[in-house]
Image (cartoon, rainbow over all chains, first blue to last red; front, top):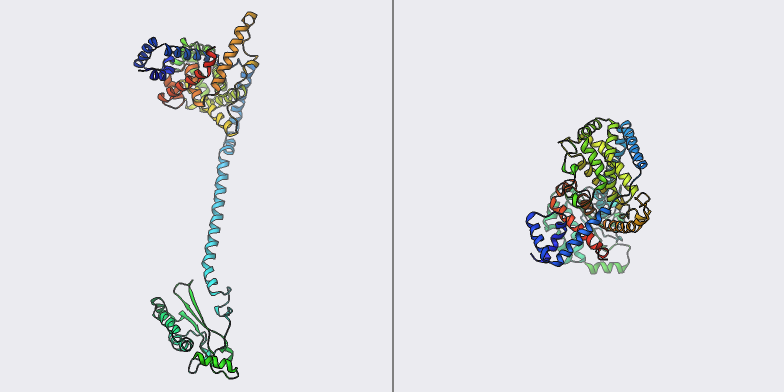
Length: 263
Length: 222
């Protein structure tokens, strides 16, 4: 063992805390190594100082007072052990439990109301209608005068749940006049879409309204509106179409010419 | 085994070369002479006899106060801690088994109480308070002979030095060194009281002795 290893053992050596084997190693080393011998003496001297680490002599009054306090506490504790034990130990737990229950209740109610609002909100925002009003009552885009088309359904069919065949016959016919290439593609795309095809085969609710041109001047002012309710109650497709006026009597010659150019 | 028959009660094995634990010789001797009666006192106190418990306190109060003062550093905290120690002793005395060492059990409670008080003190932002100033201790034995004044001054300086050295030790190391080097308990007993292993206690003791030596080195080389 070298001096470095011996120095590590010296604190235990001076306190007789080493086993016999190590103690013998350290003893033989200290006898020959002067520096380690000096270190051992310093450790012993510092340990001797510990005898001065003594408390002051406390007075008998202090001891008497301490004993009386202890006995008083014991007498008080035995007299009111039950309530004191409950007050000291269980009351904080009850408070904590009550606060936790209250917090959970508030969190539960908050979650319930938030979930309820989020489930109602999409329908309102998509239809743009206030609750209690139908989608029809929502202000439509700027209406253009519609030219009644001959041979189409009367306006008395409005709201009665038309079939998709009506939409395919009546409206695209009008639209094809304005844009003979784009609109039919859109209609065909909708018709060929597997999702919407299944919708159209689903029920009459899927097409709520098809406002076809009619002869009634009052209703002919309104734009075409097609609503498709998908199977998901939160998704409704609303399509507005602007009907085109054709050769309306009483209109200006400019509007008539414009309608002809569309045709 | 009756209470007081342990090695600790007889006298610490390494105490002869340490010249320590002088202040605890009186209660040790008293208990050694009265082992059967002390065991009876414990039985009676465990049954609720407060007079018997007061006798137990009288027998052990100096030792508990010395230990708490060494761990906490001032008289007020030491008094509060000692009071709490005896309250816990009374509370758990029914759990005490007669084949246990009463004073080892008492030291265990004392160390735990001091640890709790130290934690409370740290929680309130108080660090380890300095020990009671040695110079203001009227209770210390003042030499009557004027020739001993120089020796008394030297003793005061040494006490101040070791007190400051002990105050800088961590709580666990201080507890280990107090129990091992001042109270003179065997390392295994110290480990049991501190609820630790003997290897850990040796490591703590070694570290504490090295720190104390380093701190006092300057003074010792004068």
